[in-house]
Length: 142
Image 1: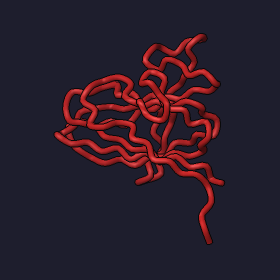
Image 2 (image 1 turned 180 degrees about the horizontal axis):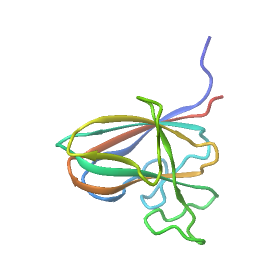
Image 3 (image 1 turned 60 degrees about the horizontal axis):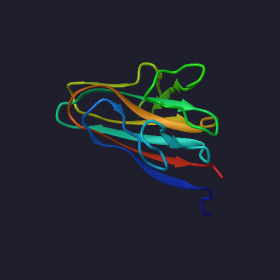
Image 4 (image 1 turned 180 degrees about the vertical axis):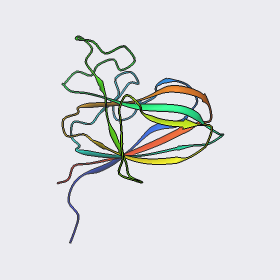
């Protein structure tokens, strides 16, 4: 039986060593994130090295025009932090908390529900050492 559907792999962070919106794939321009309108699910694997101390958060928005994810959310720049689920243990990671590394390298594998999200961004909120690399696979379930 053949699997049906669409899958796409997107590099989100490539050895990021600074804070801020790093996402510049799939038509995104950094502050505008990635258009994920055509996808339903996302698996993101994130790895660190160099005794990383960092926090990343996912941001999502709806609509045909992307927000400026690098600016504060407001009534005219609407976006929100997005919860993800840790695939190691099934625990949710609150969107406002994000994924945190505190001086120890690790690989984290999380799932994002994209059902109603049109735009997605990855924001390195805290960074003091160690590069962070993240790759996302998005799928349609069809």
